[in-house]
Image 1 (cartoon, one colour):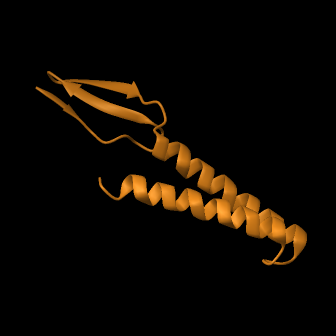
Image 2: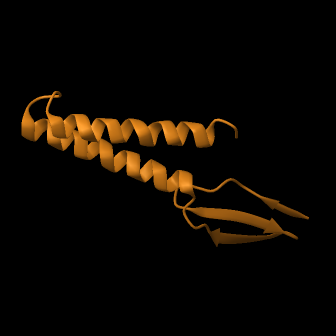
Length: 81
């Protein structure tokens, strides 16, 4: 019998076959890479806000738009799961 569990947060997949467990390292999916990009953009936007002191700064607005695009891309990719 062969079974598996969903990937863990550290990127490993637990496989079970004939009462034996195996760990398999997963390469990051596109969604994982998008999540990381979103985290990085959020941190950058917060940093720019602190540097410029305004949400209306052109740098903050530019990062915010890019962040919106990445979030929308993530939502569109994951909504049909």
